[in-house]
Amino acid sequence: MNDNIKQIKDPVLSIRNLSVSYDKGKYAVKDVSVDIKRNSVTAIMGPSGCGKSTLLRAINRMHELYENIETTGTLILNGKDITNMPTIQLRRMAGMVFQRPNPFPTMSIYDNVIAGYKLNGISLKRSEKDEIVERSLRDVTLWDEVKDTLYKKGTFLSGGQQQRLCIARALAFDPEVILLDEPTSALDPIATAKIEDLLVTLKENYTIILVTHNMSQAARISDYSMFMYLGELVEYGKTKDMFTKPRDRRTEEYLTGKFG
Amino acid sequence: MKYQHKQIAKSKLKSRTIKDKAIRVLVVLLSVVTISPIVLIIFKLIEKGYKQISLDFILKTPPNSYEAMTALANGELIPGGIANGITGTLLMMVVAAVMAIPVGVVTGIYLYENPGKFMANLTRNISDILQGVPSIVLGLIAYIWVVKSITNGYSALAGSVSLAIMMLPMIVRSTEETLKMIPVTIKEAALALGVPYYKVILKVLIPTGFSGLLTGILLGISRVLGETAPLMLTALGSTIINLNITKPTSAVPLLIWEFYNDPNMVGLIWSSSLLLMAIVLSLNLISKQIAARTK
Image (cartoon, rainbow over all chains, first blue to last red; front, side):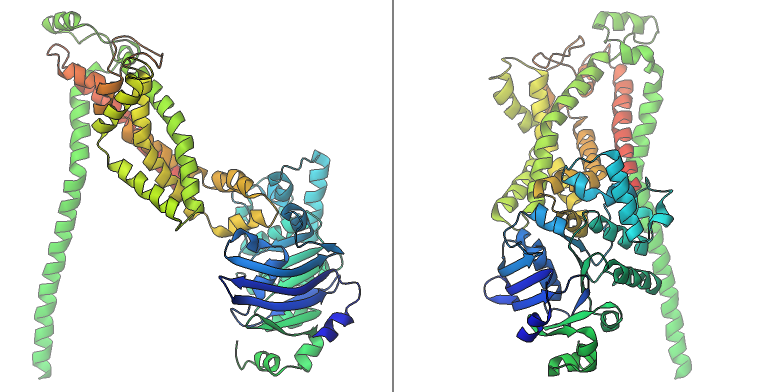
């Protein structure tokens, strides 16, 4: 494991000794230390309940809402310690996309993209807003589909379009990393393919961390993969290496479908 | 053997068909029983009340007993209307809503945010008990709290306080239920954008559940709109249009009670009831529309 950390130079995100426990002593994530490569897609795989979503949510500290969840360890994002950073600042640096598309139902497509600014009371000039909306929607290849209906409700879009809108909303802050929690599990194969293509293009400008329980998705689009089991990080490395010659028996068994 | 088996099945089938039909008839019959009161009420109110309904009825105050008697003796319609009641009801509703909505909505948010906590459960239970308190008792409480100690006399404010207490549990419950229906993913989306918690509630949850909140509030208002008993002890009634909340005020249900007690004016109870019923029904329909449109 420590070999893996050394391999990656100038990581965008360094996770050190991260543990997340529910109640007292029940660990969902146990002592995970990992470095994430800049401008790459990193997939977090593992069977249900292995702690992959918990790990992802620990990165932008979504757990702080729940009193019974305790997180320990250090997170360094782009050289800055984000462990105690104000959440507004942190979440501008780490955007998140969820399993189900969740555009704000009361807002138009336009307002959904700049929702992060609007809801936080950050005022922008009209031209700045237009620019952010167009750039973000172009980034997710949604611009051409919605440029004439920007003021319609975001919930009128199809599921795949809604999910791309949610990615655009995360991109509007121009984050360092984008955290995606099984972003295609609620979508049909065509919409899934579009999102996958999109993620591959997006890594030119962003770092992408993707939770998936779809192994072939991880194989298709990720550069690095983590395999988690029972809260532990079992194996981490280049996706190609992991899929062709896994070092751990549990990884091999999972990848060959013996459990999961 | 086989033949016998079929026979049994056939006779069973027959008795089942009969049972099925009987139940169907029963269901339809009971449904008719359920809806007939409202149909009969509306029919009666229109039949007896429509003659009195005119512009004057809404714009003028009631005649005195002598004027009404003269009109009756001459075979004319009773002159005047119930403007004092309409304005009084409106005034007290607005004041009651201004008091009950913020408290009710905030309490509802509190209950939603703290499920399973002791204080929240206690609050929810007390709110449910409050819903069961007889309205005349609430009138008495408002009499002690407001009539006796704040306005030093019967007042619209006292009426509003008693009505606000009646509305409160309904608003609390509907707020909590509405917020519970909003998918948690919407909340997460806002939090993932770094939005502080109080802003998530104010700018995301409340706008998303706005129609639900509005429905609950409208139903709460329509529920207390016809309350008479608490107003007898608080607002008392007034023969003139009064818009001062510290003075006695009339209300449509209060007027109906007064008309009922005056043999010369009794002709006005139907039209007044018709108007009250129309307002309550339209509030119900509006809230149903809002609820349906957002589903």
